[in-house]
Image (tube, rainbow, N blue to C red; front, side):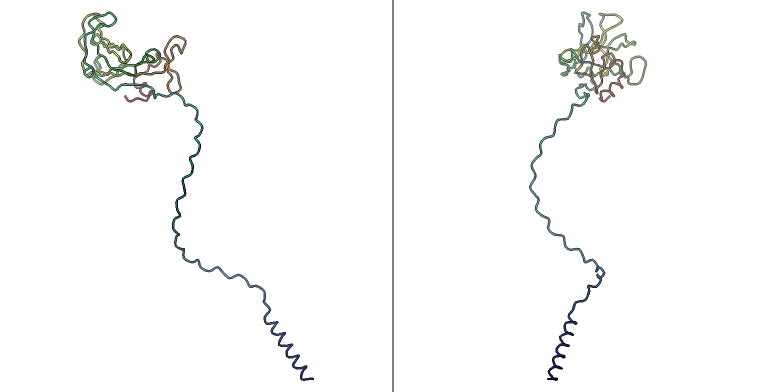
Amino acid sequence: MRKFNLLSLLALAITFLAVSCTKEGPEGPAGANGAQGPAGVNGATGATGATGATGPAGATGPQGPAGTANVIYSAWFTPAQNGNWVDTTINGVALQKKFNKSAPGATLSLLNTGIILSYAKFNPDGIGGTTTSVRQLPYTNAGSGTQYMILPYVGSITFAEISIVSPGVAVSAASNSLEFRYVLIPGGIAGGRGNNEKVAEINGQLYGESQLKAMSYAEICSLLKIGQ
């Protein structure tokens, strides 16, 4: 009997030790991060997605100020390019010289409400100068006693040379080395200033015909953004 009790106590002790040895202890502190491994190989590019539908058109913006897009101007040209000077009768005065220059932009509407500027380039300038100079027409050449002027028509502009010393007396044709050009400014407003003066809107500002003709050639080119 005593032997059995000893065996029982021994078995109980062994069981206790086994249970004590299998009990899990508290979690230890986290270890330091390991070194970063090498980057992996890039994956293959995915397929291109389908194009999305076009969005609706945006609203139309407000109209900007009037510019100089409608201004029409010729290059410099000489009478030799337009049939030379020929004898003519203008305004009832005979024995004058003229040549006609085609001007498709000279429409009836432009003649009625627009502004026409014309210029001659002299080299020398006819009054003793030696450098090229530009004169607005009508222009009187004091050295030769002649005047250059224009008469605009639908589709063309006539450039004329008349004598201011002896009206009606034949004048010699001007040298074909002279150059001329014209500038047509459409969209004028007749009577825009209450005195029947033609008025043009340029870059959002109104200019009367007399105001434009009082400007120098360089000022006109700058205002209208045209080459000299």
